[in-house]
Image (cartoon, rainbow, N blue to C red):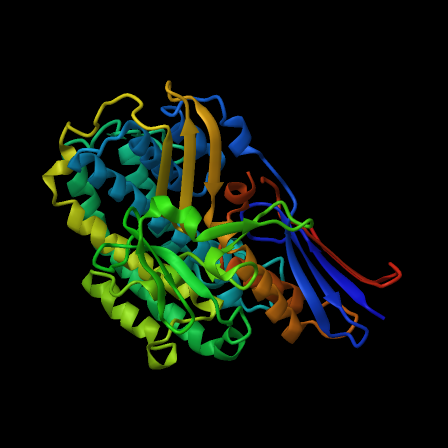
Length: 476
């Protein structure tokens, strides 16, 4: 008798989704699906708006990573105007983007995933959250708060608010930092580096403690996609698209980002509003690829800062013979390495006098009718493609979001975890949380990717093939 387990909604992620696990007659996992069940329609209601409005509008797709959309949108506008922002404008954009990496990764690791990793996958769900972490590990919880606060403060200095700053615009940015603000940022970086080093010590202990489980958390062959610098270094704002296979071979060593449609296709399934991107030359679903911190650390040749390069070497030692790290559990480790890198880059950039230069924007009119902006969001590569008329009014919009590109890997991860932990016809808290944690490892942002808001209680039902309820669990 076949059975179905439904996790609806998934908890401690941004947005609303559910998981369905199908069992065969022997009680083994036959299939697993990660459903995204809500839709917002940003691509449709942006049609008819001006290209100059788009950064401010698309920043409101999500309150967790508004800066990512701000950057990609402004870059699409640069292409439509046919301008290159002044050096000061580009450097200021990079500064905000690195601050966004810091605050978003800190939220993911310390607030959303650390309760599982430090309190235990089988711990009481009422305590397995940020408040339980504050009780059991107050220093770690405070470190996370301080680190995220730093990133948000830098964003606020630049954009005058930390959420939805309408600051980057086609051609550059609206304003530079004020005199003295770069020094204020620089003075805080040493404390943030110390926090990150402590977190890296912590995650190395976590990796050792969960070594056996890590093999079951989305450890499978896939491609990896992201941006690198022209020299092959770790990149978050600009660069060339690189695609690597599971053996470390470069399928696309450095493609111009505006040619992304040549290598990325988008499939659909009737059970999810979230599309299923794939590497076009290999077809669907064989062209499964991952984006985000794990992918970026796999595809780059080096980080380019001393501390991050040291940790990158340790990260790569997780895989044999120089192959890519294929375990999705190690997204947590990769995030902390990227925080370290972003902090080092921020510290370097604060010494640049361009940060207070008044020449931060290039002005022009519409010179092209298509603009493609690509940047690295915390969760992975983000694409904004705009088609405009001669007045700069949007006629067509395509947003290809990092979480969407991780859709196939998230589904594969859920299936792999379920095969190891779903046993029999009864639900256990540890099984439910492990399946969910496989999704948390990717830090999905469903408001971005489906264009979804919602609280995250859980309702799980286990039914046989006739629809008879075998077991049920509810978490409010």
